[in-house]
Amino acid sequence: MERPLTQHIHPDGTTRTLREYVKTGGYSSLQRLSSGLAPKDLQRLVSDAGLRGRGGGGFLTGTKWSFVPMGANAQKPKYIVANGDEMEPGTFKDRVLMEGDPHGLVEGMILAGYAIDAEVGYIFLRGEYHLSAQRLTEAIAEAYAAGYLGKTLPGTDFRFDLHLHASAGRYICGEETALINALEGKRAVPRAKPPFPQTVGLWGKPTVVQNVETLYNIPHIVNQGADWYHRLSRTQDGGTKIYGISGCVANPGWWELPLGTTAREVLEQYAGGMADGVRFRGLLPGGISTAFMTEEHLDLPLDFSSIPPEVGRLGTATMIVLDDHTCPVGFVLNLEKFFARESCGWCTPCREGLPWVAKLLMSFEEGRATSEDLSLLKMHTKWLAPGHTFCGLAPGAMAPLQSALKYFHDDFERHISTRGCPWSKKLSQQRILV
Amino acid sequence: MLSDTERRELEDAVKHYPDKRGATIDALLTIQRRRGWISDDTLLEIAQFLEITVEDVDSVATFYNLIFRKPVGRHVAFVCDSISCWIKGCEQVQEQIKTLYNADLGQTSPDGRLTVLPIACLGHCERAPALMIDQDVYGNVTPEKIEQIVEKYK
Image (cartoon, rainbow over all chains, first blue to last red; front, side, top):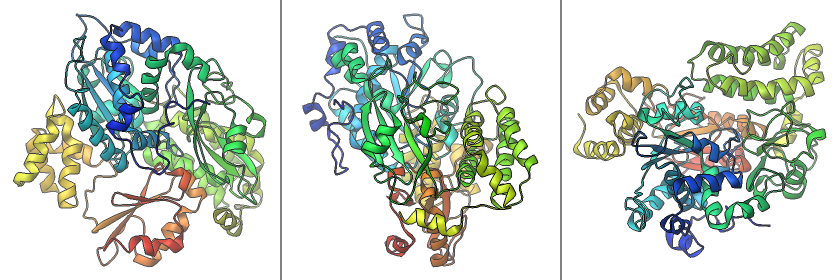
């Protein structure tokens, strides 16, 4: 099984220097640009490969690029931005890449910059990733010294500058238009769309914002081609995916696997099944803005096309497992408290609705909830549905709630009938110890 | 007033942006590293350097959880309370910190050593629960390990 993104990452957690990176073929993709691969050719190649955004959206990268105005009349400068604001709970895949192989991101950024004819790139990194920041800073300095950055690429008139922007917290910065405001030094609230960033983005100029893992794929597509990239995957979406798992499983971790691997394989073959003494009840497939999946969904291929919309979506593919020693209501309460805290406060439904949801869930946990509260929770999943809020944060927050109300309805009811949380402290303690 | 070193650091930061304002976060973080937190006076100095209003700087400073608009202790402990860490007992970790250092979330220990804050998912979910002190991340934290971890931070 090929693992192009992670095969060279050191298991001991140390980083890879420029020398090591180049020795294993690093930066060789730039020779293709020097030998005449035009930006439009690169866009077509990535479209043919079927690369889709790894941040959770799953949008086709080639299509995203195609909206950027090209040619002599296009506004200048254009910008390419790596979204390294990895703050989706349960998600740690971009950190693994940036810490383990920082030059892969630099090379991916150069290629993405070339594809849209952007002369400047920013890596937008969450403020808590200090080790990633240190390693990326070193990698960028090495790439400048070696002439990959800051110098005209031989055989082209393309010159690319790359900067690292370390942020200072706040989940909403991962939303691409909030990220653009953050980079401009403004309060990081989302912007209205349209206009889309590809035409009016950073400082009003054409801008593409892409997830870190997505960018790591591009050098490999350039080196080995679209057909090879499709063969990596088991389904119609191209490539591999970094799958991760956390919660009470025997062996939490991450693995680069063919796109379309099932949750059952990740859970049973790679994570070694559930931890001793606990049983599986459900999982969030990719961060906390995705809907629960239960036993019946474990054999669905985890990719961007195979999960029916009524079941949910892949998200970041780093899954969080709910076990039988954990209260599903308490689990969802933790998620909704997170969303309420991280709401930027810009639009009313999100700012007011999410704390209300959290308070309602708290009333279940504290034994004060009535059946009316259950109806109120259900109503919120409609009031905060897509289209009712300024950005995707609150609708994302409703995905786990709505699915929990469906799959764990009896548990909600039990909180009402027994006037409290049936999961005793002792049971939770047993879970923590495993 | 900004020291010469601080001024030099800020001048380096603004080079990365076509508009000085882009360096607002960099400026706040840079100065905070030296002064510990962002006072009203500091805010004014940064605003003057970036040639924007104090309100503009404060609208950014108050938005981000890693910018401190109040004094903090000599070290800051960030307890990850997102779902993977919650499943694995972050509440017990936080309780133990409270017991040992007499500081609840949002508080500083009476000896000024440690400020304790909650933080969104630290991205170390495979070794939950996670704890970050200043810039160092610790995984698989248990209440029993806290004293030994914090020992290093005087």
